[in-house]
Length: 315
Image (cartoon, rainbow, N blue to C red; front, side, top):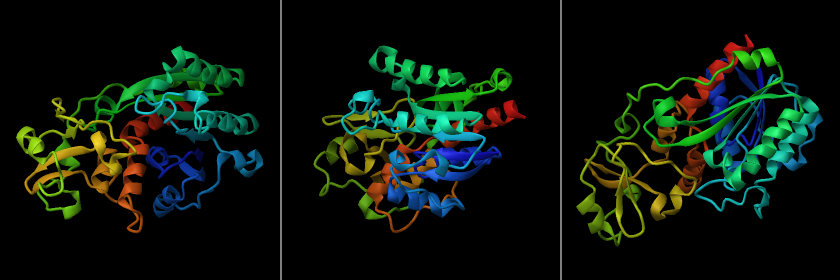
């Protein structure tokens, strides 16, 4: 079962689908550093162009299209401008649709922030749904939380949209059931090993260090500095990882370790997204870019479970 991947990022969705038995034969991604990470882990060369430049006849015929089209325009953490996003990120769905119309893959998998469903009083999602329905696709969608469906201790809700041309296959498909969360943050974050000094918050580097030491009392959860106070995630989960974790501010997850108070390393962020330890992270990419790559990616185990159900439905 061959895949064509759009807005591929570092390949989190592709990795999940390959774990379920599919194989990526084409990938398109505009960000060159994301392409570099992708190519470190997959055997294909990424088409590093703006999707607007991609002609349908340049895309191979495959059984499945994957697309985590840009979500900033619809995100609760962004401007929520949707299709009116001034950078054109919201309208990139229609560039994907242009290629879908020509290639008509039997299966389409889309991923986005949960706010896509409610943006503009539901009109944005309605447009996407109708556009795919008019092409003959049968559509299922669910908002799933990584902590409940991926056994990953991160609060991360995303909408997943699965489309089948074949109605019988669509009727056989179902989203995975909720599973027990047995993994803790200690599986993904090293609380014992000393990390590079640049990850630590200290009195001489952090003006709110005293507030951190006064309020960060547990090593079983993740904290955040919220402009004027320390927020404890009392459910012992990691908050949603974001693309701007590397820029500082209130989005940075913080942990109290045996060696001090620090932020997560890029590798730990990839871990918290469910990437395996053998996933290669290029050494010549800046940490800021690596944080961005991890925050923009998906929770791999959640997508793998969906991909497994797609494979069952097709077979």
